[in-house]
Amino acid sequence: MQVSSAIVTMHGAGMLGLILGKPEAIVEQPPIVVEKNILVDRSGRPVRTYEGLSKTKLAKRYGMKKPQDLVNWLQSMGKEDWVQPAMTAAPCQFVPFEYVPELDRLWAARQGNRQKLLGE
Image (cartoon, rainbow, N blue to C red; front, side):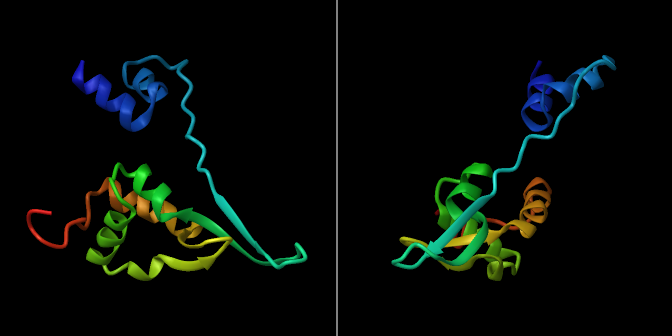
């Protein structure tokens, strides 16, 4: 039961059906939501566009409590430059969309760590 639950959590119900020998199971990848932030000037004309996922959304995606945990994790692997500054109505930081599949792979492989000091 625990193994089945883990498979459904990580890969979805369709994959569990395939593993259990049900060839009619439908396996679909969950959609990736891409944020598109557009900075506009006072007249409403677009000045700059940013596509990627915010630190907050990525931290939630990987089950982290704070966006800073994501930054610490990236720093532990030498990939802190993947977080880039952006300007919207309020300043924000984002990770460009092209890095998200690599982050998914690194997270699944349990590389890096989120803590700077022991006991945090």
